[in-house]
Length: 446
Ligand code: MG
Image (cartoon, rainbow, N blue to C red; front, side, top):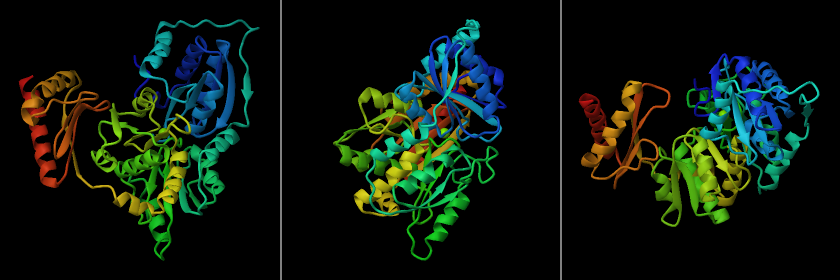
């Protein structure tokens, strides 16, 4: 049985007994644990169970209450391990557990596997009554996080910002931090409600319709509001520009990257294999772009490995390694203001400077057992179709003159996903056609 998925444990109707076991397993390895949760209705129940497990094994717990995930990640710097109880952007009936290391990065799949092994073996040792752990409270976690973020920002202009917290945990910090840097803030969905009454916590186009309308409406008379929208636990951020458009991920990635390169002199940027080629194009030859597997864990690992300062993932996850190593949607929103001030330009104009290419996607049904032979076939025979050998960091990516192709098995659905990008629509269509044909050919000969 696998408990941990691509981003910790995440389940509908998460059973508190699982949380208890995770706590107990963790207590076999570490002594000093900081715990926080988002504001889901099941959060207190899961937290109590987790803490009970940790105490049984003798760990000392520092409870920092309801905070966004980046605040927990940052606080982990003062402890051995951090545990965040959250289901991130998932609907309200979900909850989950995500583990962080002292450097603020999430547990790697191998480290999660170690915890899982202890649970599977039932390898727990309860301490006797004299050694049961204790629960401390740290009321300073908020303030310390806020001070740390503010120390790393230089914003002197007054901006107009709509901050949409999705009724999630970012509400306890995000609007205040934007006010701290001198912005005029209109906050939306900024009261805690674990049912997510204002909008669902995933910051996608569908859920942000109203927020986009509000930003556009505010600017009708020539205003310059931008929007910052978080997911349920505040580690993600989606921006809305002055025209009320949701900022395209690839374009925002390119602009952010250019800013970091210019500001810090860092010449390495990290992103995932499914990000646009507009990034390399926009940054030019002097900057190395590292492409990792899909997922924020892979991005943060690569940041450490290559000593990069900035990385982004298409879900709206941004890591600013010069400030701290946990993906941080609040800091990312503030960085947009800093960047607008630095370039002395509106967000919509910054985004429009990045070249637009044509992206097409397709998914081909494929049962679980066939995924790996199909991928093997694609890697072996793709060269004949595209005249290039693929990069195989995650699936198969063929980098071509006028575009690229990524063929990878879905981690969550019975299908093979195809994504192509072309400099124009005829290139993109041609690449998609060839890719679909290749995958179907693989399925027919297997
Ligand atoms: Mg999240």
